[in-house]
Image 1 (cartoon, one colour):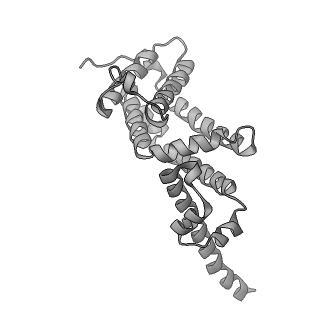
Image 2 (cartoon, helix red, strand yellow):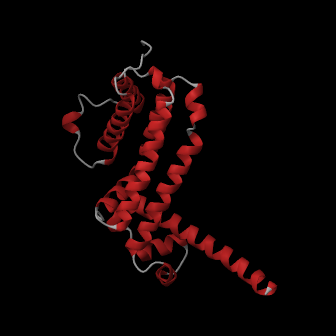
Image 3 (cartoon, one colour):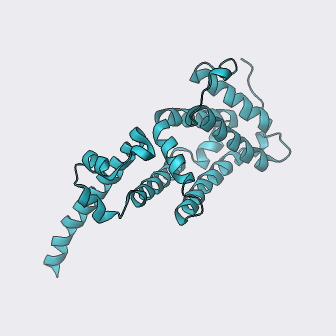
Length: 220
């Protein structure tokens, strides 16, 4: 029995590493080529595997991409909880905390625009499925956590309903970033009002966010 366990351990470790490489490769291909351009042969080549090895783990592309998307969202939720903590929220002014969040979100959306756009397309194309419900559950888990962090400093919020204000402000922030960065459309007609660079965009998003909450801001 001891010999069997010793034999299985390395095999299981190799299997986990192989799965990790496959999911990582699939995410990279999805970000580079979009949903339509992501194929099992292309993923397999990127992962250094044969297509047959991929099909032994996942019966089709959709099953593989579901695992990729859920894994990304779970890790994102974990990263948020490590990077942004209630202790941090208590130690710094709400305006500074909001600035850090907006800067982080803007950088993330810019750096991963292709992948986020593909995830959005894939997820919306699978509405009314168990996968979609899992995605929504993970999104709301992260969303509620962020709302709770801001409410640690609720005394700085002058809006008559702090919880509703934070919830809606976060929704407006995410919607603005999705519209400006992820949605494929011709923005030429809007150039006159869209901030010219990300520093200006961050400043305007922060001003709108804090104004809605009724948080006092320093005058520049």
